[in-house]
Length: 312
Image 1 (tube, rainbow, N blue to C red):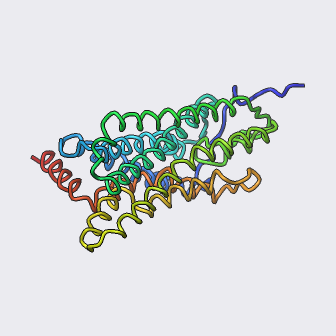
Image 2: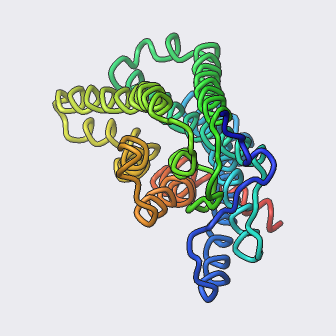
Image 3: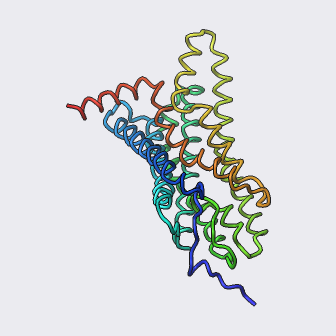
């Protein structure tokens, strides 16, 4: 007998970050502030880049798009989480769950590929500076952006199609603050073994590719910089890439992603996965504007100009 997919009628209940009623309002205040900082910080980065023609370069092209994707990434998750923190029902429809899952994965993977694109940009700038303008031309940058979006959306579409075929006949309580694949798979009464194999293999390819690209790019940059004879030359070369890609943020982003998604479903831990997920869905997008602007003289200059325009 075929098991009916009840979730298509009744939807899910998102348990959230904590079931303790006393923590709901403090958590609401904390994540509201983090969300506003993320949105305002990334909007300022976009406005500063687009207001100055001197920043219309490949590196800032990718940075402005990264800021836009970061806004979308957190907006897919945080507003619904904030509503649920003050709501009694905490419900989300089956279609709403799949839509959230789709855009969460699409934005998250695009974020990852944009980080890789920025690493390639710095690789060409430092290791092959005389051919930089020819290699990193506007057409190439646009193709890299379109390729990042296309791969990410195809990945999301495959995942959501697999999830839509599952049956949910028991508990509909998702022990998470949004519709992520692992906690939703835990609720399914279908045989998810084949889906897990497909998801694990395809996710490994999609996530590992930009990560390995970043590692390779910065390894080549380090080797090239170490060959520069003068200390001043080495410092100048290192400073051009430190402002846009900090190792700590990359490690935080990919470390938490790998921890959450590259484990068997049997090893899924509610509390640990919530913490790890908050790291790459909320904390990293909030830190990006600070990381990419604090040590960047051009960005600091244009942010000051933007501030003066607003105050005048």
